[in-house]
Length: 394
Image 1 (cartoon, rainbow, N blue to C red):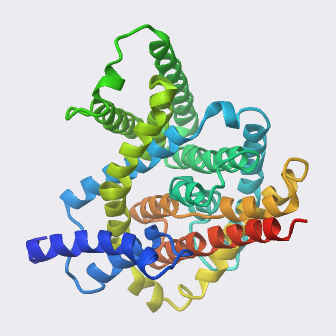
Image 2 (cartoon, rainbow, N blue to C red):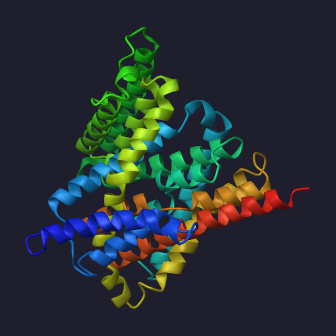
Image 3 (cartoon, one colour):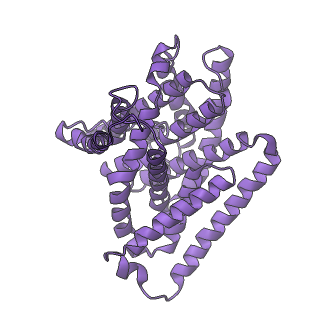
C-alpha cells in the first residue's frame, strides 16, 4: 500500500463498511444483504475501481481473522440437540447427492469447453453459505423448528464436507491416503475437544465466564477469539482450510460455555464480528475480485447465469427430493434456495484454485459473481415462498 494515501484508505474502508450496513435500512433494500454491498464496495474502492485501497499483508490478516470469526459464530449457532437425528442424516445424504450432481455438471461443462478445473468447480457448487445466511435466517424468523434444524444441518454439511474434499484434492504429493489420515485425525481431535468442553462445563467451577462477561476484561470473548485462531492455525498446519478449524472452534465454545450464557456471548461476538472484522473480509474479497478479467473474457460474463443455475441444481435438487417426507413443499423449495446460497467458500475455493494455477482469473470471478447473485436472490425468493404460503393458509 505504498502508493495509497493511508488516511484516505482508512476512511474508504470504514466508510464502505458503514454504508453497507446503512443502505439496506435507509433505502429499504431488504432483499439485498449487507454482505453483497460489502463486496461491491470492495470492488469500487479497490484497484479496479477508484484505487483508494489495495490488498496488503495487514488487511489480509484482518480479513482472515474476520473469516475465522464468521465460521466461529456459525459453529456456535448450531445446536447439536436440534440437528441430530433426521436433520443430520438428510443433510449428509443431501450433500452426497449434491456432490454427484455437481460432478456431472462440472465434468459436462469442462467437456463442452465452457470452463476448466472441473474438480474445483464441483466442490464450489456443493457449498452453502450458512455463515452469511445465519443473520438473514435469524432476522426473518426462520431458525425455529421444524424448518430451522433442517436448514442449519444442511448448511453445516455444505460448509464442512466441501472443505474435507478440498483438502483431499490439495493433498498433492502427500497422497490421498495420507491426507485421509490427517482428516480422520483432525475429526477425532475435534470430537475430543468438544467432549472435553462439555466435561469442563459440567464441573462446579467458579462462575468466571459469567462474572467477566460484562467486565472490561471480556474473558469469554477473548477465549472465543483464542479458540478460533488456535483451531484455524492448527487446521492450516495440517494442510486443511482455516474455515474448518474455526467452525470446530465454535462447536467447542458452545460445549464449553453454559447454555444460559450463549445468548449474551452471541450478542457480543456478533458485535465484534459483524460490526468490524467480518465486513473487512468481504470488502477485501471484493477488492481482489478480478472483474476486468471476467468482462474481457469472451465467455466469462455469459457463464455467470450458468453458474447460478448450476449452484441451484447441485444443492436444490437433492433438497426437493430427499426432504419430501420431512417438510411441506413450500419449505422444501425454501430449503433448496437456502442450500444453493453460496459465497464465502466459493471465494476461498476459487482463490485456492487460482493460486494453484488450475483456474484462470476470469473463471474465478464468474463463480464469485454468480455466488453474489445467489446470496442476493435465493434468500429473498425463499422468504417470499414461505411468506406467500403463510399468507394464503386458511
